[in-house]
Image (cartoon, rainbow, N blue to C red; front, side):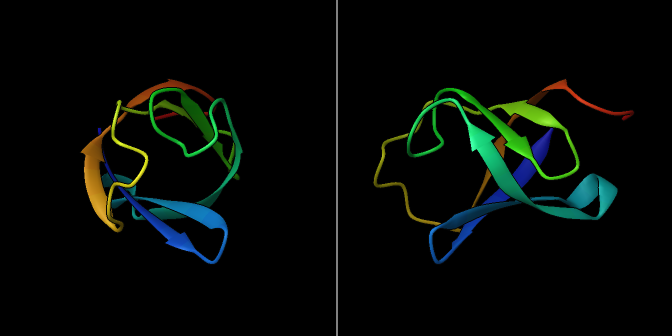
Length: 71
């Protein structure tokens, strides 16, 4: 699903337009977010795409929901 990623200070934030959901990333597999999983505050977990560490934010990417809660 399409998600928008941005960073406020040191905290990543994910916005899911389809659900009008905006949550902070509370846990991530890899430092820098890209190429691993990212868990947001409501419990959803996304598989994040591989991107260069210096990718400019905000950016909209295709991330696969791999866990947590109902669709």
